[in-house]
Length: 242
Image (cartoon, rainbow, N blue to C red; front, side, top):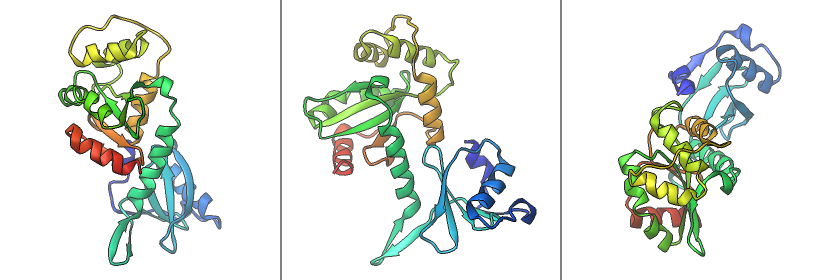
């Protein structure tokens, strides 16, 4: 991911000429935009750690900076509470991811839902991914346990790949569920075209740090990178949905 490559160092000293401003928001933005003009900054606010500011990027990613914008940290911020280390960065990222995922209309997903769902998972998927196919074979069991499965498109080989074309065919099919069943069974899905969200969902997944499929996002925004057997996944999903 571009942001990760850009901020690979744990701390980066920036030239004072980039950030000589009284307002921390302005100073931090000026420094970051000098490094990457299109960096998708959503918000800058004081972090729980005195003197350190939290920078929220699109997709939930978090960075930390000094008030003058001269120092930048990429990594986890922990707080010790009652003898336990709480990962504040992970919690903030999960909250932001949940907010973004929940803003996606169900009409833009392929949804497999039980009659009375207890919780849901959102799965970034590719149709020719072996573990995606294995997960799909257990969707009925997940539904039986009260877990709604919401699919979003993530063509691993890019938007010009055969996988992207298949995902487009699925999203443009009259019956998306049936088309997804076919695709996951490695059966031919009829060619179709329409105004579809495949590219938008692929970009969203990249912003959130998805690197492979299936990438499973729980209701609380925490992400599970990879396949989990249905009984185990349902238990985790139900706990996250409480």
